[in-house]
Length: 124
Image 1 (cartoon, rainbow, N blue to C red):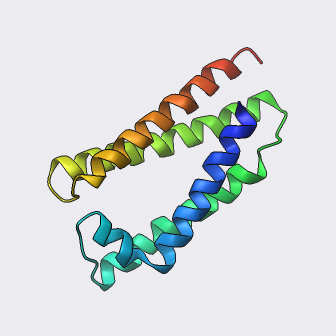
Image 2 (cartoon, helix red, strand yellow):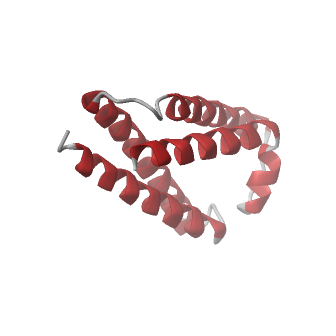
C-alpha cells in the first residue's frame, strides 16, 4: 500500500504543482476567483511546495525503513489534512465556488487513506 500511495501522492503533487506554477489563473478561475500579482506570487509559493512534496513522495516510494516511512506518512497526513481544512473553510466562507467542496472531500478521503497506511505501519 505504501508504494502505491507514494506514487499517487508524488504524481498528484508534481502535476498539480506544475499546473499551479504555470497557469495559476486557470485554476483560480475553476474555483471562481481571480489572481492579482500578489496572489499569483503567493500561489506560486504553494505550487513550488507541492512540486517538492511530490518529488519527495516519488523518491521515497521504495523506502524500507519502517520508522522513516511513518514520518513520511505523518508529513503527508499533515499536508493533506491542512489542505482539506483550507478548502473546506474557503468554500464555506464563499471564497471558493462549489468545486472547493470536491477538493475538500478528495483531500479528506486522501487523508483517510494516509491515516490507514500510517496505522498499518505501526506493526513494523
